[in-house]
Picture 1 (cartoon, helix red, strand yellow):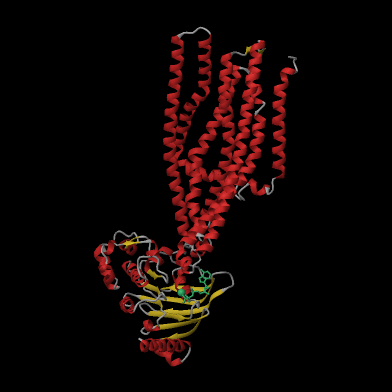
Picture 2 (cartoon, protein in one colour; picture 1 turned 135 degrees about the horizontal axis):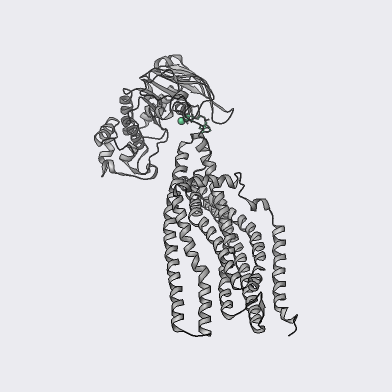
Length: 633
Ligand SMILES: Nc1ncnc2c1ncn2[C@@H]1O[C@H](COP(=O)(O)OP(=O)(O)OP(=O)(O)O)[C@@H](O)[C@H]1O
Ligand SMILES: [Mg+2]
């Protein structure tokens, strides 16, 4: 064979690889939405993210150092084992000595065992640290979400928050436990294997190095494609989580309105979109992996071709001859060299994706709660219960005033009722008193102190809020009444339940206070839930009670019970009440009539009736309706 002829196989291989490089580069250049593929619309700098992530890793730095030391031991196997196998070949082919062979095998086994044990210990330590970091991250995120104001919470779908607390924090913990260690490990392996190969044979090492630029080129190209695929999968997962959490909560409405099919088709669309994104992700890897594998096979072929030619022709390069044991060691080294290079690329991708998760979590952690204690806010030891609104203006959304210039005064231990058509601002007034929102203009005073100057926690401690839609947590009746305050003894819970007339239905339950409450309290009636919310409020001994009565239909029997407990509660302290049944509030000291966010009338029941204004109209309407119902029944 001519000298040129000897090069043919290498030339053909080179041409194939060259052509593929051109094809992929063109595909890369033509890729649409490069910007989208490059990042996850990241605003934070990588360095900033790393700095903040390090805060979570810092308490565990000793474990990380230990892991890295153990990792170095486990790498020894990757670097030494090919040399030992080559050595075995040498022993077998040259001077066969059983003793020598066995000793090499023993060393091999020893290194293998040490490497396995160190890998095991390493993953044990990492998993432990990872779980700790994960739960810290989850806790921080959850606690922070809890500190956000009602307005901020309304602005984010629940599903999104769930994804942050679960998936995203998981991705970050994976980064600490898996990615960072493997990144470092792969770097060390590459350096170690490269050095070992150089010591064995320069010529063959240089030949293998020729393949590295192609691996890097392919990797860079595929990195963009995989990033875009990763991003799509992530976005669509969040999408489906958001859809699910909302629609599972509202599934009853879906059933009542026969909208199962329509909802299903919406879900199906999102599900397909996620499936499609996943398929794209898999396809990208399906092209990437074989391509790199092809490079690996090519380098092997080259190795065999060149090494055998060099062996046959007895070539030497810088005094290094090619022998059979060198060939075997190189054959093993190629895998150990290419694998980490390929892994590095994938790990960089995952690192990017973990950074994106980190940024998403940090964005939530950076959300400054907008209703916070002022620096000079004071602690209230007790509350008398004087409440005053002075020219209060409030809007949920800028310039859409929900309350306009509202002023009123409630003296301690008085009962004041708010009346008005739906949407007139009753619930809004009640939620402002506990600073669920901050007002834009005017002042709200408690015992003569502006509520902005009172610590929110102490404000809410003295105020018992009973909301319009009662929310019960899954748990037991007891846990829903005490809300994790374990210091409240059972006798007190029972006394409270008797006080608010909740004992009648609780006593009928098989397990009494220990009866299970299912999600949102769906195994109790609206009236029962209302009574439980009374008990929950009273048991914490508030000085001011705020009750937003539900409009839900309650049977007459429960209504009488509720009326009775309301009457009793009036004796506890100041009471602000929104009642839809005017009969409930006839005894109120003051009745405030609202219309479109403004106070239109104020006075007690009889004064307002005499006025013959809006209240009179509402009262007559209800009165007639009640008479009609009475006649019909
Ligand atoms: N979280 C919110 N974001 C934006 N607007 C809101 C929000 N909550 C209430 N609103 C608006 O504020 C107005 C007053 O609502 P509010 O809940 O105070 O009425 P309400 O008098 O309690 O009515 P109802 O008798 O039906 O309970 C309504 O027009 C409503 O659309
Ligand atoms: Mg309301």
